Image (cartoon, rainbow, N blue to C red; front, side):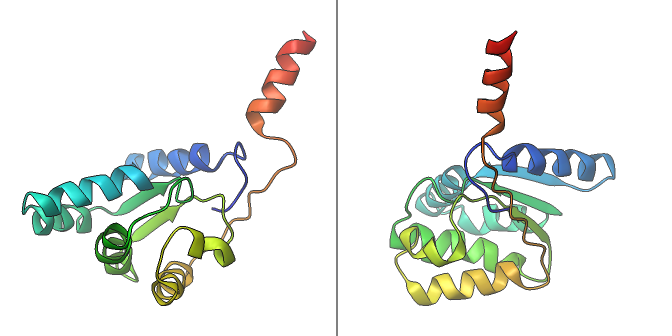
Length: 147
């Protein structure tokens, strides 16, 4: 899901995740920063293999806000990329971002890795362009101020 802030990406991904739970699937929601931090911590305490194994058992991984921060080489190439790559063609993932693919080099240092990451994410996927003129929060605020 690619769209500007306030376009409903996180809300929609959570809704899909809840429907998946109701259908009996296992779902886990992370912000990109949160997952990167948990991966780095698991790596630091020699629990990375166990954590990655637990992630591999999840039917749907929701990765929110992949655009609000940059990742250092260790987090992006070794950890976050590996999780996304391991899910490729094996399990579902939803990624929300504000940045179009051509700008992902602003997030990750290695352009070759960015190309591989986008290739894996877009293969057999649905890309939702969720850009809107006004954010839903702004529209709600405007409507509340009119009353």
